[in-house]
View 1 (cartoon, rainbow, N blue to C red):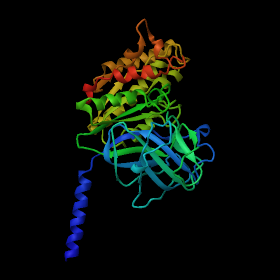
View 2: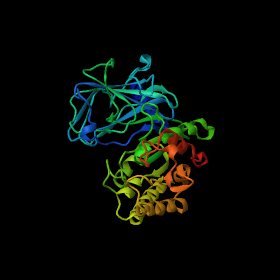
View 3: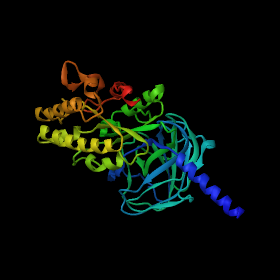
View 4: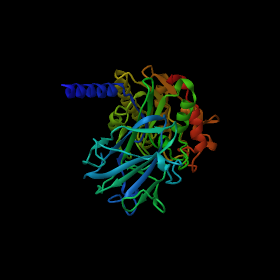
Length: 394
């Protein structure tokens, strides 16, 4: 009888602990089938070790990791995974050895992800601060030739042959593989902003291993503001992505249920994805209307879940091959709807923040990356991140 009572007490305590958990995404990335030219360099993943570095948004004392094999056509075997505080934002593989913790999956250090599967680790005590760098070290068994990952990491990963934690002279590659999200057990009032975007959100033009995308700038501002200091930011940008289809990675209309609504603790959504659709379109106005229909669909589903949705205006691109009067008409149509729609909960006017006041169809020259008149440099991203009204997120 005494033993039975002890078991019941243990079960009750465990149930209460789980009920009190409030998981919030602190870092995440949008996965896709990695293109062949972006696959892991030699010696490859099978039988080897990979250290990937990410910079979280909000901190916490308990953490868990999500991994993905979603786009792989055969299983991927994980022998072990460790987390540690990284000493840099990606410019080296160095870690604070004392901070290292081993992860388990259902109590086991190893797990095999089936083709198309995503997995989440058991929660582990791991203290991480706001905007701190975390090293995720994965030791692989047999892996799939088709790799699930995120090519546009803007962060260096380190690959070394064998089962090792010594990444001296490791092969460097600026891509992420298999990692999907980090989540922290946070206070009840904590929440996350998730962004659906393309390369301008993914950070093309930002500085590798500096973490200065516009979403990073925005995150730091939230954390520095007392009234928004418990908000995580999740960057779901994919370079070359489209809302309707035809770009790189799964189209926004197909991936938004996963990338927006399968994140933990989401309270706000930012929609900032359309420039590739407009650039590829034959009829800019018609394409804009179709994008608006998708946005309305997302807004409706979000509101049913109690999530607010903000629209971000599309930045100008005159001077790029995407530009024509037809395409500009599409951008004008979409931006006008974003600025005036009563369905959205707020507006982020990136267009107004970065356009040339003397040529409203073009970006300011000081913000140009490689003079392509489409992507922004670090100064441009800083301007974008700084133009967002934090009052919308209180």
